[in-house]
Image (cartoon, rainbow, N blue to C red):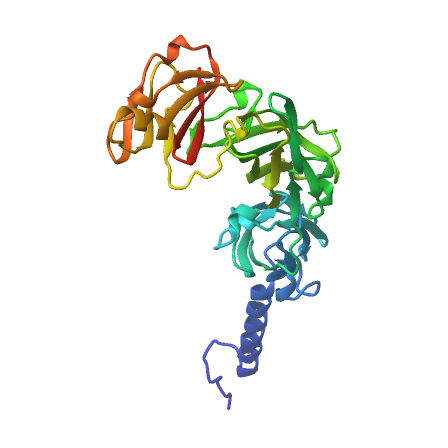
Length: 405
């Protein structure tokens, strides 16, 4: 008797089992095959990618440092080259980081390194110490790599550049130089040869010193004039400690006070960083104030002509100043019983720069026991230059410089 197979016309069970196992093995092999067609015997699946660190840590970076560069290494386990483009940095502190190469190629079975810069913000944009982060994304046709950039910004030292004005003296009518001297310059040594522009502003009593150059003069407010001077420095010039950054010619005036402070209120300089493209940076500067004393004093009957012995609560201001044809005078006015007493006790006088009386303006003062305002006319009849207004009431006096253009 002939036995028939269980599956008519089909293969035997052993054959079927073999076919199923072969199909599974073939399927597994095809899933593991890399996209470039290499056999699975050369690589495993996890190696068939361009890799880079997930975090690039710059460590501690001092706030006053020039910056720090870290190397980011990409490893290519493929058998083909991969081209990458860097996308714009993202994250809260993206502006502090910079990818120094936006396009690069990772050769097959090789590594490629690119530089990433972390630079602390300029001092005028002071930010809290602590971790600063951003994200760098690099994209190719087959890979996207995202790397977290991290730096800890600290300030363990405070190196501060400083400048000062020395104590000066001079005789009335002389022209002297008011120097601004570099006292300390150690926070960025590379900048010693790279400062290319600087500006200084200081205030002075306008009746003690006045800029010799008309272009350096500024409006006078409450008897104080703010003098501003700019300096261009060629890139090859060397600036070092003890050097004079500025020499501002000033004329010694008759004086509201025999001694006056020279108050520096601002100094800024631009420092090109050694990067491409070149950036500029404002460095923090400590300001040292100066003083000036008039060496010789004009006297009348043993009394200083224009110096204030005691200005008490007197008020005297001129606006605009500089003036042209007219100016408004704001002054303390004290009424008297009769004109003779008034003229003896209250005087408002206009002097020229040599201290000679040009006009007695006392009669222009309104008869009010208060601070009053009135107009001073016909100034265009006077030559352009420097003049004084002096108000004296009893033993008190106050002087203001008037510039006529």
